[in-house]
Amino acid sequence: MSIGCRDLRVSAGGREVVAVSRLDVPAGETLAVLGPNGSGKSTLLRALAHLGGAARSGSVLLDGRTATTTELRRAVAAVLQRPVLQRATVLDNAAAGLRLRGVRRGEARHRARPWLDALGVAQLAGRDARTLSGGEAQRVAIARALAVGPRVLLLDEPFTGLDATTRTDLLADLRAALDRQRAAVLLVTHDREEARALADRTALLVNGEIRQLGPTAEVLDAPADQECATLLGFTTQLPPALTGREVLLVARPERCRPLAGSAPPPPDAVVVEGVLRRVVPLGGAFRLDLDTPAGSLTAVTTAVLTEGPGDAVRVAVAAADLRACR
Image (tube, rainbow, N blue to C red; front, side, top):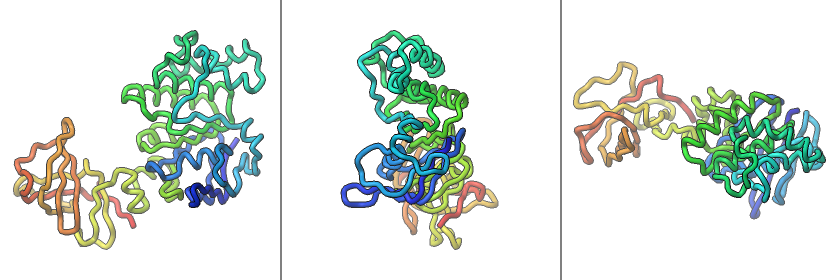
């Protein structure tokens, strides 16, 4: 089953916070909605599920037809940022969605158990859910959503608050779990690596509007405009006044290479001169902040510079690492 919307608009506090003219997620596809904090990502997800009390207009579609709230309740399972678990065992929490759909307790437990196994928490089945860590609780919440066999799965930043190791493990387990089912999946995230790991396509949501949509690898590597570039980590931005080019060029700071002394740049590189303002250790690398005639510039390097704050520095960016955007 596919989920989508047409002319979906959501207002809160007297202003419009989401305005999406068209969005479609077919069965078997994972679409990531990637955006900064406050861009309207969670609001969009809740509007698609007819959750919350915000003023909403437009249509939510299931298989191309306008869906009622009742139809959405039957088709959709959602995993929110902070899992809500009952005062019960882990297994009973995983079975809770099935129980709400009228499945008998024994059958619900039987159908939920394989999903606990798939999410790596089967050994916790008999434990009181209130004793779980954040990562464990999120795994149980995801197992509960998958156990009902949803035709649409909505994931609202499910990795928020997890430590790096827990997050990496859960990403891998969730990817494998999603491969086992044919739901249309919409993942809301602010992290491009989560989109890269899980999503077939990615939509960039900025100020409540979809600015860019396409295959994940293409979107993450080719920002459409300056705000999309910032969102995707292309935070070193070189305006025409600095490069002599006709368009804004952007690059990721880790692709900006400081040139030592009189070392020649690569033949196809853009070279920018500036004054080093500060050097910030990042644990194995250094962030360099430069002041240039057209504004600040950031580079990240593993090289140890002999220059210090106040010294002139040249930074080279290879043509292959530059992107042009409006």
